[in-house]
Image (tube, rainbow, N blue to C red; front, side, top):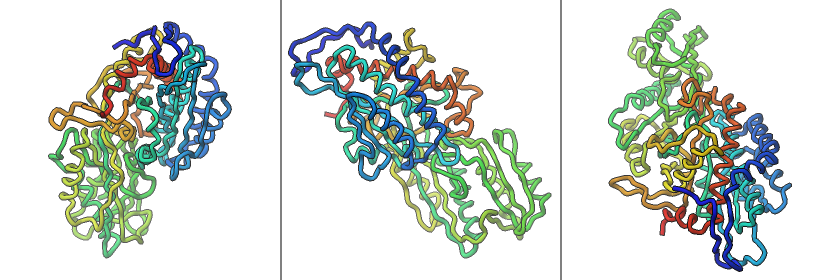
Length: 506
C-alpha cells in the first residue's frame, strides 16, 4: 500500500483542482520537528517527572493546553468534557483562500495518566508526546503546502483504570473525525490487536478477620487454578485490594500473616515453594504480635502477562499451610477488618467471548463472595489494515529509521482506544468487517534490544526508567513524524482518505 507523494486535491468547495507535490514532506516534517521538538520534548519529560493518576492529571492537562493556546491558529478547550476535568480538545483549521467546502479531518489521541505507585511505567508520557507532536507537525504541513484540512487533538484521561475514552465517546468527542491516530511505547514494535478486558470486584466477609482472609485466599486460589476458560487466549488474574494496588497491575509487594506456626516452619515452607519459576521474587518472614508476617516482593508487571509474582507466592503459601491444625491467616497491616476485596482481571482475545469468561469465573467462585460488581469493559481493538500498512510502509524508508514493523496477531494488553474504533467482527472468522472509526494504534519498541530481551515490560516498575531514556524520546519523535505524514497525505488526497475510511460502518 502506497500513499502517493503527489496528490490531486478535489475537495468539494475548492475553486479549482490543484496538484500538491508532497515528495519533500518527510524533509519538511523533519524541519518542523527541529523547530518544535525541544519544547514538545520538555512537555513529555515534565509529564514523566510529575506522574498523575487517572482524572487527576491536572498538571499534564495544563501544560498541553497552555502550549497549544500559545500557538497561532489553534482553538483550545481545556476541561472540555463534562465529568472529565482533565480531558481537553485542540483544533487547527487550514482553509486556503477560496475554499468553502467541508474540511477533511484527522484526529490524534493523547493519553497522560500514570500508574498508582510506579509513575509512568506504561509510558503514557510518551503517548502524550507522540500525540501533541504529530498534531503540531501535521498542522505545520497543512499551512506549508496550503492543504485544506483540520487537525484535532483530544486529551484522553484515565486510560488505565476507568476507560476514559468510553466516557469521551459517549460525549461525542470523536464524532468530528473518521480517522484517529495514536502510538504506544512498549518493548517491541508491531501493528497488532489488543485484547478485551473486564474487571470483577469481589467482596468477602467473615465473622472474624481470619475467616475473611481465608475466603479471599480460597477465591484467589480458585482463580489461579482455573483451566478451560472459554474464548481465545483467555486469562483471569487476581489482585488483592490491599496496600498499593490498581487494576491491571501485578502487585510488587504482598504481606500475609500466619498464626500458629513457628518462624522456622514458615520460612522453610515458603522457601520450598519459591523456585526459579518466580522471576526475581523474594520474601522475608519476621515474627510480630500475631504470628509470623511474610513480606513478598517482586518485579510486578502487567496483568495480561500472568507471571508468577508475590501474590502467586502468597496464594501457594496459603494453600500449603491452610489444612495445618491450629493455623490461621491475617493481614499484618490491619487485623481488625472483617472484609477483604479482590479484583479479578479477566481478558480474552475477542469481545464476543468476554461475557462467557466472566460467567465461567463467577460460576467457579460460587457463593464465596458476599457481592460482585464489575467495571466498564474494554473491547478488543483490531488492526486497521489500511492504516497499519501505511505505517509499516513508512517505517521501511530511510526517513523513518524505526525497528522494522510487521503485522502481528498477538494481543499483548488492552486499550480503551477500542471504544473509539468500535470494531465489528465476523462471528465465525473473527475478521474485521467494519468499524465506527478508522484507528491506528502503533505499538513501538523503546528497548535497546530490538527483540525486547533484557527490558522490563509495561507496568513493571523498571519500565518507568525506560520511558524516560533518550532512545524512548527519539523513537517517539520518529513515530510522531510518521503519523503526521499519514495524516497530511490523507488530508491532501480524497481518494486515499476514501480508502482509509472504507472500513467504516455504513
